[in-house]
Length: 242
Image (cartoon, rainbow, N blue to C red):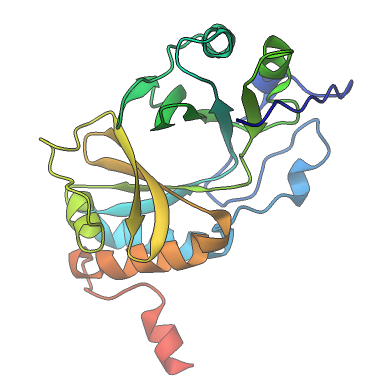
């Protein structure tokens, strides 16, 4: 396991000072001075997602949750590092496949492997210095806390037909008896590796790498097409005309 790398920027802003972003995919005004420059991986498709969601009604909708806090954690079960991370985040680390601890609408931790986890907070935007407290708690211990907020984006698929959209190209068993609310797995959506979190009733969060965001959004929009009122993938007509 890699050792923790430490950073102590004196100007880091408290994570609690972050604010939620609009669904346009661009960050709101913040004290970091960098927010106005940030553009989320799927920001250029926000219009198509909004159009599809409007046409999908209660059946299906899609949006990006931009700039959410995502921190990669590494620690051996029940080690001093494990206990330090639990103290830092105020949550028990999950212990088994599919397990998620915490609040899915705020801070929660997803199990990725026996010694690897992803801490996510969808209630606020990532800010500089997210890992300072965790790194300090791990000083001298074999563990890791790394800010991965720019590594993936989070796409939220909702609606009565959301599971059917996913089942078109996800090989995992997504039936509620196998993948109930509060579960998360590492799987693939078509050819794209993703983390899939069943975060609520008829709500699924898909986490692709940032470089796959464009492909994943378009893939999902295509899968949603049959459930839209006009039965057509948003943007398809314009692309065909081009």
